[in-house]
Image (cartoon, rainbow, N blue to C red; front, side):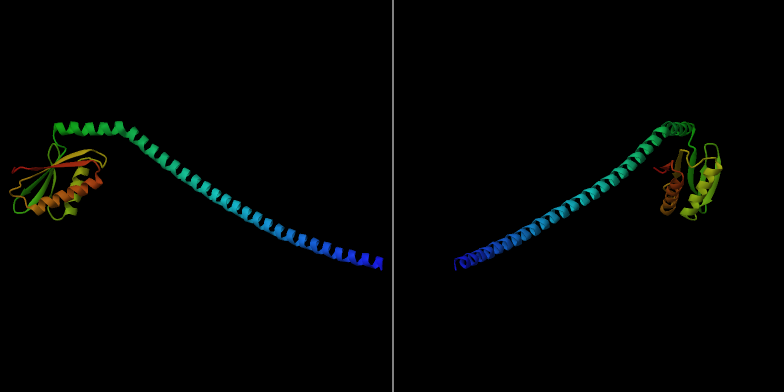
Length: 198
């Protein structure tokens, strides 16, 4: 009987130990899963931050390249301006010299039975046109400038002379608009307006 009692007690003790071992193993499994989940979350967070950093870096590189390109363009533009400074000064001086000798181009708005625009260089009349339309007048002025050997890069000083008492407002406006149109083609075409009735 004594031996049997000891066996029963050991069996119960083994059951308790096995239950405790099972409980410890279950807890360890739960903790391992929690640690693994936490580690995966941290890895995922680090990967996201890394991806964001890579993206930010690529954007910075693109911005740097774009700024570098804009900087180079600006430097080249300023260098061209600097290189052309002497040329522009010489062209302007030549135009002023011609101005002191007499205006290179004079436009004179006159009337007989109809209004006509006469174009003179510093020596003589180089052409005339009827006041048909703004485009026609502009075309004629450009033809006259070309005939007088003036190029689109020349500085051209001009005066429009008209009698404000006789000239019709619409005619003066048409010629002014035509002169503006000429100024688009001839970048350095400058015109002053002289009303002889004032």
